[in-house]
Image (cartoon, helix red, strand yellow):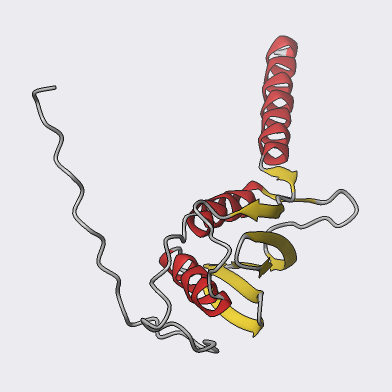
Length: 167
């Protein structure tokens, strides 16, 4: 009987330790993107076109994109009971994504840590934004500064090329 009590106590302590280790593993240092170059950027690109393409990239990830000023977009991702707000600052050649605010993600300013889901969202957004080039030719639309974006529009992706069996 005495041996059974200690065996159960040991399982409880091991279970508690596992829970604490797992919960601690979900936190990581807040991801930031600093001066990331756009793939294929050109010096003669139009900032309004870049703005429009960044908005489209964010909306494909279901991120609400709001233009604050030329070269500055506030990106908000909200899902169930969590919310993350990021600043995206950019020019025609580079962009940065920085943490602004969050809810339900356990942000700790002292340790600069947050739930690791936030970092996944930043990583995915970075990947999509970095590939916005090539832009449409100047004069083919997209030259007005968008304040809002119609989320009902869908963009069709070109079909994927078929792989040939013979190489």
